[in-house]
Length: 338
Image 1 (cartoon, rainbow, N blue to C red):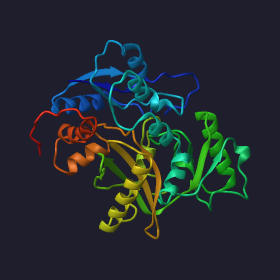
Image 2 (spheres, one colour; image 1 turned 135 degrees about the vertical axis):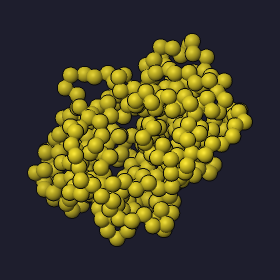
Image 3 (cartoon, one colour; image 1 turned 180 degrees about the horizontal axis):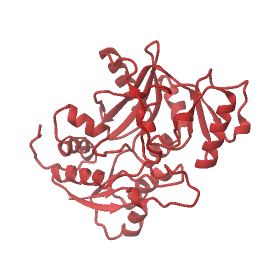
Image 4 (cartoon, rainbow, N blue to C red; image 1 turned 120 degrees about the horizontal axis):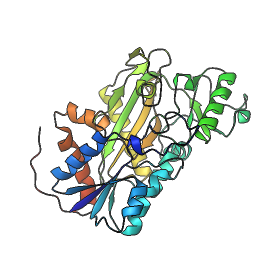
């Protein structure tokens, strides 16, 4: 069976003059595609590299695919993650991962937070600002420090050490930066600190499974997650970092429970990654979800493979196998490595 791989490499990003330097941060290195291809082969299928959603559009009539794995991000639209799933759905080609509606909705951090609240999952209150002039000092989402980020981006795009603000003047300056550089609203919420930052991968369906929780290091001055400050598109700099808080068994269980509730509420499928911060009292707060997570060899899923003593292609093959089973596709018999 032929399984299409739809993806955006860093070299595929369609740059335009004046765009933010981290605009391509959600795209992937070739190693990610190679890891997916190896996992697909481990399941007994033939991987077919397709390229971007626009490549898919041009080649759709000639590809002869039985199914597809989509990690394509698109660019400059809050609907961009839906491009490939919609094309595949229209062509009648089954696709692993969440559908177009879930991908578009979850890219909007405000709507996602509203649904998390409806699911009984705590998330920091927020305000949306279309301009710095909209900031009302008497109607903020909470006390300082506050945190400012783009409404429709992932992979920490738009976040810098200055995203944490302590004054109204700094808040307005960061809102203006986001609106100007990313051509979208800014989302502002209280900055949660004291108990650490954590990420939870969820895989599978009926029922889904929350994998072991990973704790993230934070920068020692701002307490912002180190991964956000060392990402692509930012000037190289050496940061001091530490672990904040402790991941106890009870906290891990609660983070997994909350992650599964958000995953179910958004009707995610096959895989996702969810981010949380914990306050000084030990209470977890949901920040955002990515149903189109990276499968890069240095990302969350690769770290989980290493922690469980398995090769990454074998671990990733089991993640993808859950999606192929949902689609009703036959899997080759194989021996688990590790």
